[in-house]
Length: 132
Image (cartoon, rainbow, N blue to C red):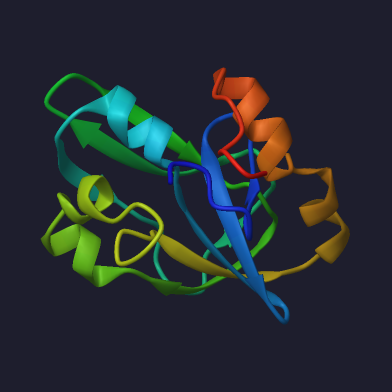
């Protein structure tokens, strides 16, 4: 499944999974497919502040380097050291071990401004899964 139903999405192809006041952020299956093989990931340090829709890091692939944008504002409480060491996790498990950062939300209402799974599917031109 390329668009899980339990996440929110940005138009720039980041996803957010909220647990309390912490949001886990990664790039979508669609984004990693467009990038190709990811070879380098640059992430902000723990304690850094990010603003919604500002750059929070870079993902480089064999094709291109792309900024990753913060879908929410807050403080970086954890960065995924695994993807820095093994960037291919972004390709292999974009919604699992390929997550990028965890952000303590400063404004939980921002999550509501992001795309629903159905809206994101429409954004990328994907049809809804059968049975939905």
